[in-house]
Amino acid sequence: MSVQSSSVGVCIVTYRARDLLDGCIRPLARSPLAPRILVVNSSSNDGTVERALELGADTWVIPRSSFNHGTTREAARRRLGTDIVVMMTPDARPLSCDFLERLTRPILDGLVDMTYARQLARPGADLIERFIRTFNYPTDGGIRSLDDWDRYGNYSHFCSNSCAAWRQDALDAIGGFRHTLVSEETVAARQLLEAGRRIAYVPEALVVHSHPGGLLRDFRRQFDIGYSRAQFRDLLLSRGGDEERGVAFLAALIRHLWNE
Image 1: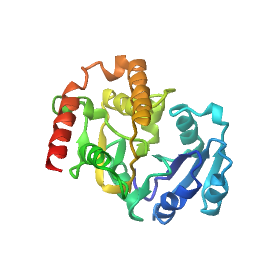
Image 2: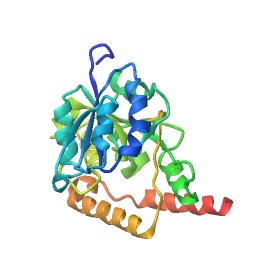
Image 3: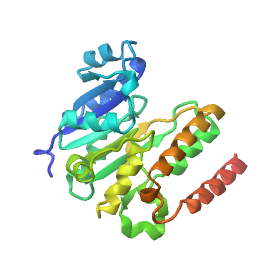
Image 4: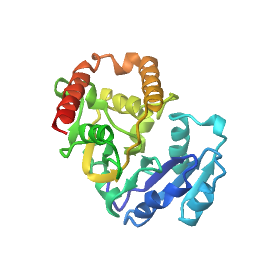
């Protein structure tokens, strides 16, 4: 797969995102890869679609009631029909115009079938928010496969569709994104690994993306993740749980809070 012969599409799933689109789309539109940008909107009627069109993106409006983290993205990637699809959320803001080139380079070089970007905390983020981004998105990147399971455990399939690139034929081979409450990218990444494929974390591809916390929001998020893990437990937990990752997170958080 080469730059000259490969097409790149970007899918941005939105709801009430008008004010976020400029920061997300403008760097993408300036990319030498000339991506086709598709903004999917769940009928928010707040000017998101109109602004997306003004920025040169294609749009697709769906009923809010039909949105699903997995199947909506699955339909959108098929609608794009490009060789590579980059999944994004509108609050992920690329920090350079060569962002797409950096993110997709390992795929174009034939090294992996999926990559994901490094996410930095937003300006004004609190201590916990900054720590979570630092822990999950370190400065060192690399390629992961099932051969690395003893080293990484369940972190092997960690990724985020807030900003991730996928080779479309690889997604086709595993049946695409599944119907799930959340974590469709985790399920797909694990399926790729189980199929003998590889994924890469690309810290040189930078986006600003984080969310303020809050007990209710965090509870809902963790509940949804837990539900999805239970739904796909035969896949995600087939090689054991992620207790070691959880212990490492807690230990690092305690050190971080102590040093602060």
